[in-house]
Image: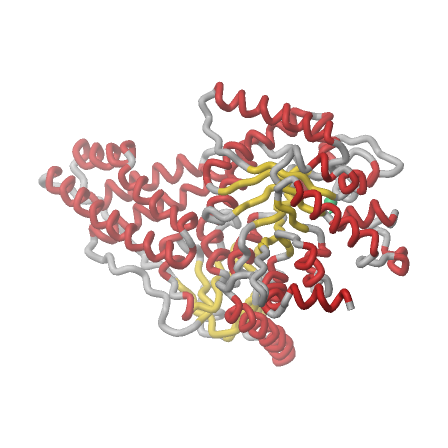
Length: 549
Ligand code: PEP
Ligand code: MG
């Protein structure tokens, strides 16, 4: 048995035969063109066919992975029509009297090298896209343009790298997983794989030869490993884990696409909590109605510098586009307490959970806050984005936030940068916010109850301290009464209210939350379908009646 460690793109376990996929080596020869005009015509024809092929791929990707992820093929179409790319190919044919294949290959190489030399990660990755379109054009010019087929029998596909166009052509039913030696976690291929929910690894240094090809393999997407020729013990452990996952998938299949509606017709929204765009595939796979809590602080925690406006914008845009019109609630940064970022240079505090965290940092260091707000407002153009502010204790804070938001909007308008209209809400996670929720409700579009902190601050039990477990009652009457009070105050003011703390996923309380009239539960993606099952089986009126007796 050999084990190779890669970077996981999507979790899950795949067991099956490994098939090494090798791109056809295309040797492009430089040839003298007797008539350069004929070569230019050949290039124009190839481009037309290439654009048509990309159109077909776009449609297929739209059906399988959604419009936002399919957009890469529209980008490829645009790249094929790009003025500089086209000028370079035509000039080379004319000035050097060379064949179209050579001019495309040389231009492709030059452009890819130019992208590779850029500082920006995102731009560097576009080199793969230029190579992809040039390869396509060369195949067409060579008369060898049948699309790659990777769908003979179900297998783990192992490759040096896979272009987005190759990934989307994979027939999902026939591919158990894919593993690449190269490729980055942010490449479009990785994004597509996540959305297709195929266990996948990139950056896995394994040989692409007979040591791997045709052998039995196990891909463990949870820890990024591929086992080649596994021993009996590993195989049996993995088969058991795989069977467990199959069970979950069956549940998923029966409940996917159903409304979250009780037997007596009460509806509730089921959204997902995420901390990273890598979680988006799980959100889609589990049929979430939206994202109820995107913990944006992970973006700050994963870096050793303040994420720039551009870095943040790209991530918020991707989340918003991927959710294609469904609500995406992004919480502004909530560092401090248990989530410390060294580069923030915060002074050590006696009591960090009661110290500088979340909105308190944003209001004292508005430059950090404004960068995030600008990125959020800019991304709001791409779908249904909402902003949520954490750790609120007063109306004054909300008004100060609003004043900063107005400044940000004014500066965007001044610069001619567009932004959408978006909902702004607050987290109710301090007892103070609960007690003045009637006043707060007049200021915002929605509430989301953060039961993790609300429990910590109400019960005076440090959420990090496991030694206090015996004192901690997650169903404490004080918490349940507070939730009820917040829901009532929200509804009186005509705004909606959700729960995004862990208690939202507590199946023992689902009926109670329905009875209280909670409008939304935002939970980890894996909890959505089990909750949907309970909702579909609940009669709220009967439950309320039963409680009275
Ligand atoms: C909460 O406090 O309930 C919450 C959702 O926020 P976090 O767990 O990130 O503090
Ligand atoms: Mg919290």
